[in-house]
Length: 107
Image 1 (cartoon, helix red, strand yellow):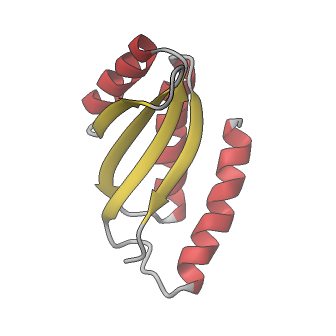
Image 2 (cartoon, rainbow, N blue to C red; image 1 turned 120 degrees about the horizontal axis):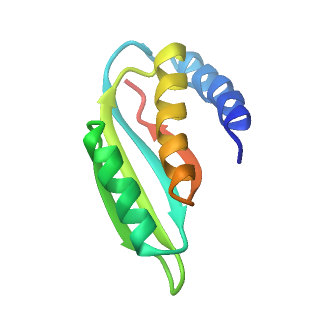
């Protein structure tokens, strides 16, 4: 999915948080997920994201794919969400992965 589609999903996702009464400026753990065909690419992306302050893990998912999880505590207001979406998306795609999106709990 391209960055434009991801940013459109942010609008929908943030609306759902607002509708639940969430304070979008309250920091909470935000998790991002990416999928890779090879472990080396996933590990390189994980190292780059760790350098940007994310806690990262890579795990094998089946025979031929690897899941990258990158998490960081942050607010999820519109500007911040768009910034972290671009940041993680770009790293994942640069290393040959597919960015799946982000999730967080209601605060």
